[in-house]
Length: 402
Image 1 (cartoon, rainbow, N blue to C red):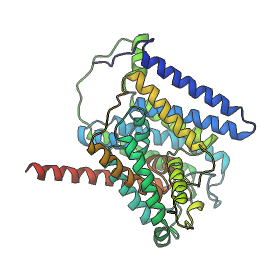
Image 2 (cartoon, rainbow, N blue to C red):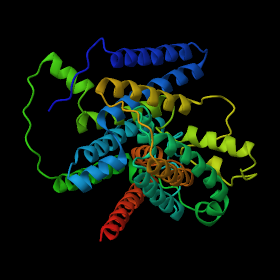
Image 3 (cartoon, helix red, strand yellow):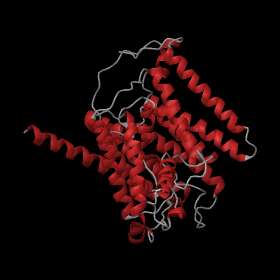
Image 4 (cartoon, rainbow, N blue to C red):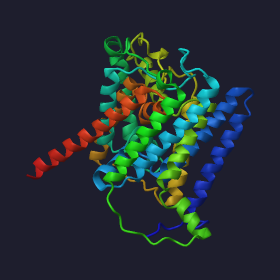
């Protein structure tokens, strides 16, 4: 049954249009700042809005897409993720070829999320996977679901701040034991651009084939005639198909890297946590090596919103507008279980994101697109963490029923 198309003059459409108009006006005002700072801030806000629209309309959630495949045999979400990684890798390769013509020269591409590969990364990714399974979404999905009125997402984000604070407190011994001497592996420096890109696309194609092999047949649907109303419904109300969603995420990631910074959603959350922890006396006097590593960098905040903060603001606001129009805005009061799962899962994700220097967007998505081996390590262990948490939950439920 096709999703209902909202009436043009209904309050959800009017509020959504006002929200998008506000974002456009804010981007215009930011762009009036002299120099490059205003242009970067304006682009960050608009890129966040485009990202939020795409996440909400395509239901681009790493955990949900994984569960769709493993539980229901629906490969669409996983295929969207793989398409985003492929398009982003091609886009990054084009940028790298202009900025770092010789990948064998010992230089890393500017600002790319190419982090160290260490046991700490694997553990952090696994813990992040458990946290997103417990809370019901990864951090980026919690941000767009905040725009949908999710009762769990606010508590997951609060928990993530607490998890970041815990991560800062445990960082120094972890850094000394595991990260300090860990190699930073940039695959183009090992394989060259053609070899890295060919290998990346081959692996992604293999994963896509596995996803399709695991898919289950679905009942055929009657195609709606190609009309203006049908096109509007497909754009505004129905879930976007996998390929356009992945294409848009990959393009947004490439443009964001070219104009501002690699995609990431935890830098602002982590910076807020670092600032609050410092003010409360909960921050170590020195965080060994942290500020010299690549990833979603955290700082003690001196301004209200950084470029990453504007990106996140645009993401939430645009996902709210998209949710209103698509009928997905459904705010509800949280129950006790949602509060506890949100706080606990968010804390695990916060600790994992701080220790791994990013999340499923900053390390996995931007890292793999940039040719970082760390991105692939994160992908493997975050998947294992989510699957292990789901398997454990099923066992607990079976024993409770038995």
